[in-house]
Image 1 (cartoon, rainbow, N blue to C red):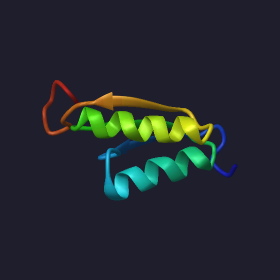
Image 2: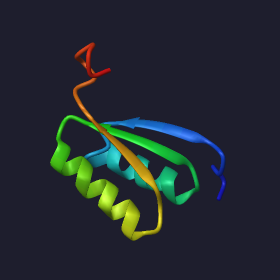
Image 3: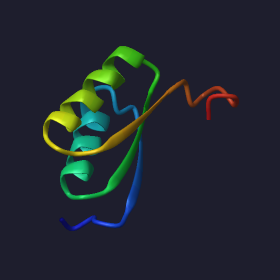
Length: 69
């Protein structure tokens, strides 16, 4: 677990490169805070991480909006 004790914030974690990054960081032991504009996709990624035994916190929102960021 190379990232144990580290925190990673991943935007766009609901799909594609963001999803792969969030899952890899979680697998490597990081505490992951995952964000995405699509709540359903974000929930699916968090469930996938949980099924693998990893912990991930999701923050839905659009980071292009100041109030979400």
